[in-house]
Image 1: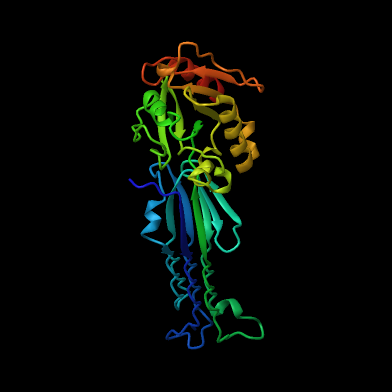
Image 2: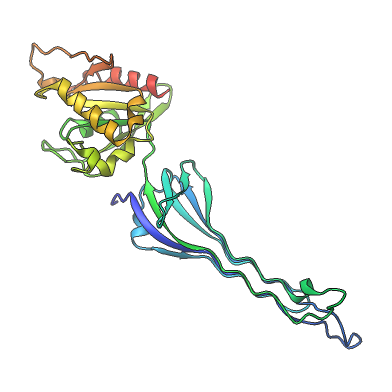
Amino acid sequence: MKFVDSAKIHVKAGNGGDGCMSFRREKYVPKGGPDGGDGGRGGHVYLRANPQMATLLDFRYRKHYEAGRGSHGQGARKNGKMGKDVVIPVPCGTVVRKAESGKLIADLTEDGEEMLVAEGGRGGRGNPHFASATHQAPRYAEPGGKGEQLEIELELKLIADVGLVGFPNAGKSTLISAMSAARPKIADYPFTTLVPNLGIVQYRDYNSFVMADIPGIIEGAAEGRGLGLQFLKHIERTKVLAILISVDSENIAAEYAMLLGEMERFDPRLLRKPRVVVITKMDVAPEDFNCPAFEDGVMVLPVSSVTGQGIEVLRDELWKRVN
């Protein structure tokens, strides 16, 4: 399935039905009073978070959504039916904004969470509402109101417990495949991962947590270079960050500082999240390699996704921080 994390759609709520102008006319009541019914309310448009959806791909093919209009009122005080509501399913983690102003409308993160985005027009009132002591036979009924319509932007931000961050070819995809059932594309060249991948990591006593692998960050990612800006948003919701650096890096400390700098430029709040540094590919480490220590005191864990070295220790440490 193609991963799509942004879309723009047009939504229109239904118009309200017109009120009815009618008078009671029966055999023995030749001058009955007004009896026009009210029009029905137009249908609303809602967005609802659906955990079965993982992408906004559907909105590439359908961009217009319209609710039903309300029925008109009828004589004998018969009110019109309400228009049919439209409920649009979106993935959990969808941020909704007005396209014109960028104003935030909703942030749907919970299963079944719902938001009204376009309100149906009210039904027009029938002529009985306009009768008075001095005007007992009003020849006026109210027209139905117009339903709201607007363009909205949808942006998906993945919901995961742990986010994997690192330069291209740091071993993120290999690690997520070693720790979960996820099977991302893996190859020995940069930018193998072009879309985010989610994996469920099983933990003891039937517990689990969700891990997200995003495309590799390059210098300048926060300003839009490479794929960084497009996918850094997918670690905004994570509880813990695992920063991956390959053991064959020319300068591990400089690489760590550069990754922190890109995250800080994108969103300084990312640096407040608990994090660990994972030195990957330990199966090819030189014999005299020693794990570095960093000034911020972050825990450094050596692992090899090929041999399994350090995987269980990493699993334990991530679980502690997630909880």
